Length: 419
Ligand SMILES: *[C@@H]1O[C@H](CO)[C@@H](O)[C@H](O)[C@H]1NC(C)=O
Picture 1 (spheres, rainbow, N blue to C red):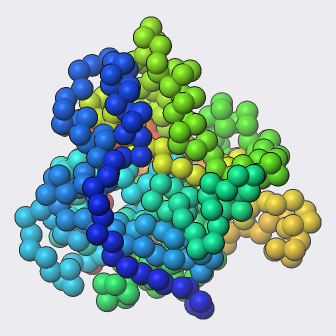
Picture 2: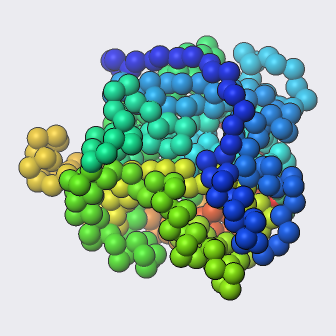
């Protein structure tokens, strides 16, 4: 367990605006959501995360953790609930890790009473939220510049590095800061992928996990049927190498994604609302029954939060290879890095922390066959819990109207049982 550099400090965070505040204001002005957006929602959509949490009278801390390869990650904390006194030492620690293109905001934006981070804080947990390298809160490095022109060095990472370097650094920091020896881990989507990578490549981290809860578990993608992914997957390696060659490493930086989406889809008064609302949900699976249109401006105020081209390429490789392997850099680079022409498989039998699955039969990004295969190969799978709603989709694990009743209540019971 050598050499994880832990530089730390707690920042006093100044009031700020959400990642897409300007854009959201413009959308609302153009009536893009098709409904009257209340002042309260406008505020939630445009406030930066620290102020959003404080608006609802919860404590919020931002910490900074430096990885062994120099990335500076913003780690967020809601140390206790609204009504409780601050006794952090007494509270079990829960660490939440977000999905692709997302951030710590994903468990917060649905608000108190709905968002998992708030629910856990109210239930007596010390809640920590990670942010992967490259997202809005972790877009810094000791020497590399994410915005350097014609230079993508900052962006040379996939979810392999997030699991192998970011998670260990953040978990060690949280344990050191709280004086604990182990914590509960809740991952969503890519936040489960990165957990399995961490425990596979660095098995000593299993001992630091009391229990792991995988919401919409993703590792194998052999059965993925998303037409967009299937069309692009075979080219993913080429796209990544070409992008890197010409110095592009970030997957559609925020301003570009919104300029593109805005001009293409959202700004035209004729087709505004339905299409604009569904950009995000096209990929994640649309489920009308769980969809809360009221909170869409808040979602779009905070997400997407950034990712590298290589993260997408790595998922593309998983679709094409029908396997769960380290990043494929091409034969020569693979030989240099891994000593084999084909990237090694992640050894899932190394994952011996107790793992609980929370999955749905209609999640287009975590098909049941792939979920079961993953479960069978883990070292210590505890239970796989199917969401009792046959239409429950990928994004519903975060923002579904009944996520609390269908998923979180049961999950919190398991946390209690596991200590
Ligand atoms: C829908 O979202 C709004 C805004 O976040 C929230 O106040 C409301 O409780 C949500 N509705 C349901 C049914 O969850």
